[in-house]
Amino acid sequence: MRQKRLWTPNEIARATAMLAAGQGYHDVDRALDRYIGATWQKFNHTEHHKKPLGAGNRSEPKCGRASFEQLADRDRRNVALDLRTQTQEFCGDPAPGYSELDRQNEARARAIFLPRQNGDR
Image (cartoon, rainbow, N blue to C red; front, side, top):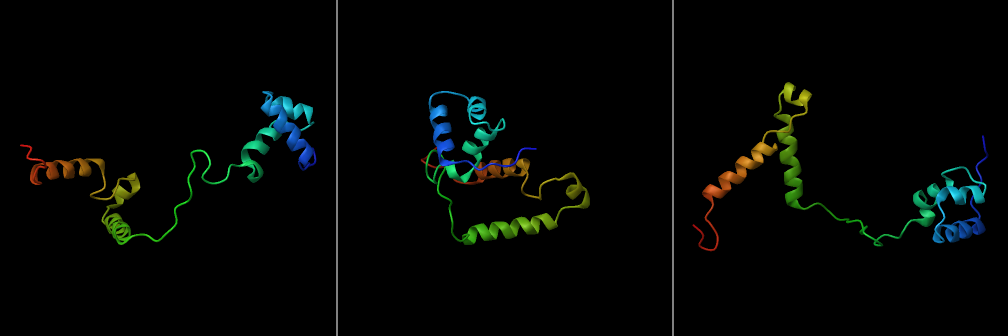
């Protein structure tokens, strides 16, 4: 078994240049006498080469306190989970009021009983 060898700044610079020139990860591994997959792992799974938050399509983490509505929804879900039967729990059925059929029925009821907008009939 090979002993783990740390990446030197010169190796990182050489690997970066080789990858920028269009060479593959396996070619870089062979040139630097690294095990196959070491370069890919270094450039894709280490903190050293990760993009900073906000770069690309990643966004800043959202922090803050939950709103009253979110807490109330959580409590409603917990109460609904207690209303499930043993069979529903065993089969993994959603809590009463949280299935797709329940959502569709609620949407139909809203469409029938709520007044229409913009004078539509």
